[in-house]
Image (cartoon, rainbow, N blue to C red; front, side):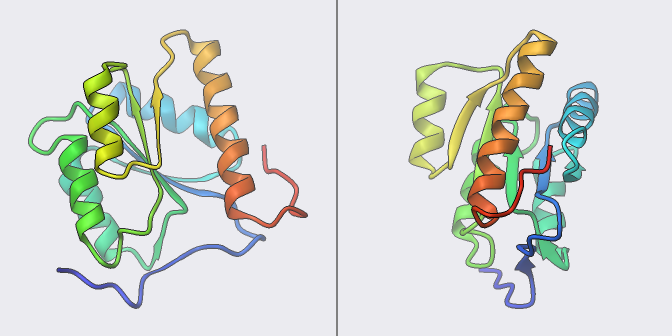
Amino acid sequence: MYAAESVVPTSRPDLPLSVLLVDDDSTDLELAAIVFGEHQLDVHTCAGGAEALAHLRAAPSLPHVIVLDLNMPQMNGFEVLDSIRRDAGLRHLPVVILSTSGEARDVTRAYDLLASSYMVKQRDFAAFEEQVRGFVSFWTTCVFPADTPLRS
């Protein structure tokens, strides 16, 4: 099992919330990166599960939260989540599933694999922007002290 003692989360209040977006669909990934980026976040993207795991294991600092798609070829989101939870250096990272699937079996499986939360991606762009705004507000509050103003 991979141990990453030298890789530490970025958690200083003077830095923005750091998010890793993982999605194999380049259009969805680019759109999400734009919407997330509107909130002054440090956004990094990966086009698949294997790329995301390699990035996490090589990064000098870890993201505050990972946003993970489920339906990806080669290595789906469940496999990525399972790999993260089995890795001593990564298992503490919050992983939020962002999927078009609202199927109960997918939601249950994600939580069985210890997903931090599950969001069904809004199809309407304005609704998706609002969904991201709520995500940013929640995770900024979780990561930074209460007296730190939200970055949005």
